[in-house]
Image 1 (cartoon, one colour):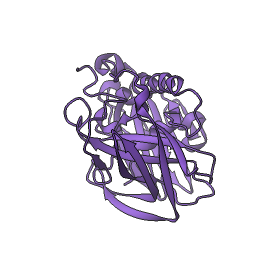
Image 2 (cartoon, helix red, strand yellow):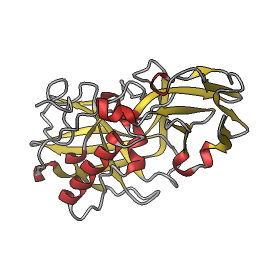
Image 3 (cartoon, one colour):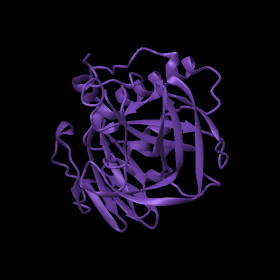
Length: 288
C-alpha cells in the first residue's frame, strides 16, 4: 500500500524554490489547506476508503443509508453501486449512473444520486477508492490552526541530489508497506546549526520529478504539532533541482493522518530535528 500523504500536492500546497513572496506563499498555503480539509471531497468529508486490486471490485450495498454507506468487497448485486478495476479503467456503475471511468472523469470523481461522492486514485497495480459524504464536514470540521507567520522560517538550504534515486520500503500508519524514493539530501540551517534531512519523492525518473518532500518531527511534536510528523515540500522545474533551495518552514503541514485515519502516512521516514520548529500547521486543529 502506498501513502496518500501526497494528495496535498494536488491542491497546490507548495514551498517553491524560487518563491518571490514567502508571506504570500504562506497565505496561499493556509487557504489550500483549509480547502483540502473542508471541501466536499476534503479530509473531513471522508466516510470510507478501500483498495481494489487489478480485476477486483467493491460495492456500496443498496440497503445502506447515505450516512451508513461503507465499501464491501466484490461487485455486489445489480442494485448496488459498484466500482471495478479492469484493463486500466476504474468503472463505476449502478442505479441511475451511466457507466463512468473514474480515472478519466473530472477530478477523478463522480457524484452519486444520493449526494455521496466517489473518487479514485491510481497506483501501479491497484486503485484506492474513496467515499465522501459532504454532510460530515459540518459535523466534524472545527477549523485548522497555524503558527503565526515568521520570516525566520524562510531559510536557504543546500540540496545534493542522488543521480539514481534509492527505493526505500516503509511501513505506513495502516500497517501496510509502501515505497518512496530517496532522491537526495537537504542541508538545512536552523538556529545556528545545520541538519541533514532526507528528501523523498514517489517517483524516480529525474526527467519528471518536480518536487521533493521532507518528513520531520521536532521538539513541538506531540505538544503543539502532530506527533506523527509533518511534511515540507519544495518545488522546482521538472528535472532541474537547484543546488540552493529557498525553504519556507511556514508551509509545513501535518501528516494527513492527523485529520483522517483513512490516509496511509509513512511512519519510519521522518527525520528528528532537535529544536522547536514553531512554523506551519499546529495540532490539534482547535487547540493551543
